[in-house]
Length: 276
Image 1 (spheres, rainbow, N blue to C red):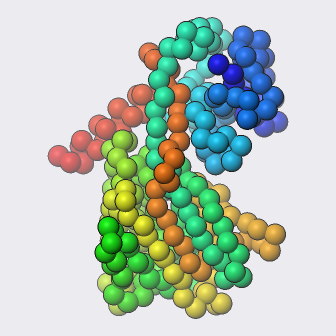
Image 2: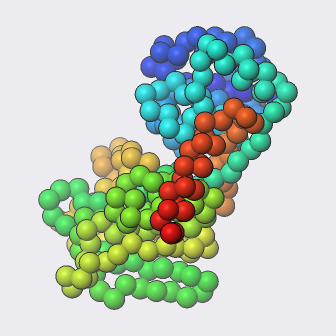
Image 3: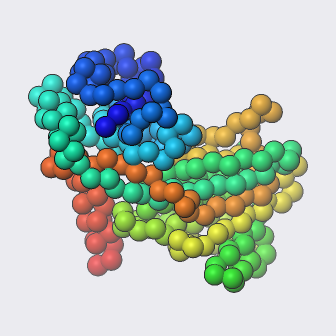
């Protein structure tokens, strides 16, 4: 099995010993297209960057914690790295798949954008003026259009894993980690002064959001916490479509070695408490 080490200068300097050991004991290639698996050493931000990297071509990711947060990554120390490498060489791992959001948007300048998000995507106001928008939900041949404009700070969409972050603060909804549903959470938005609550989209739903009066109600869009920018500056979406991507993100899960399994159990515990 061939591996590609996804790195940046900061993480490689801070975790140089990890890179040295991996290059010494694993078959590491220099070209992403030659790899069977990507290895990410860093924090959650590095993992999310790898998820969105088009060079990865949906190859599985082995995520090792070399960052400051790394809530979803495997901790690596001097004491356990030999065991980790031994498991990799013995193919003692499984591949887990997680849903990814696919976004297609057009800006007020006519620019087209297509991107992907692992946790969440939101469109919010660029300045102090609230945004106005409507939402059209396509569901198995049926279309549901909001009855009037929503006015507020914007709207957020999240996957099951993303539902533990900003989405939870807005919607108070946490999905089971293996759910393919999408949380749609209007951000302090109302229709005719009636607050619009969050709701759940099913995996085969597509949502179209259209923003109005955008010439003086500017918007911006963030994928996994990173705002989209173009050569013309901030990307300000006027129309926005979101659905589940047909390809799922694949993660390498090390058998009897993965802290991420604890994270999933914790999510199930939280969801179970909410159901009760």
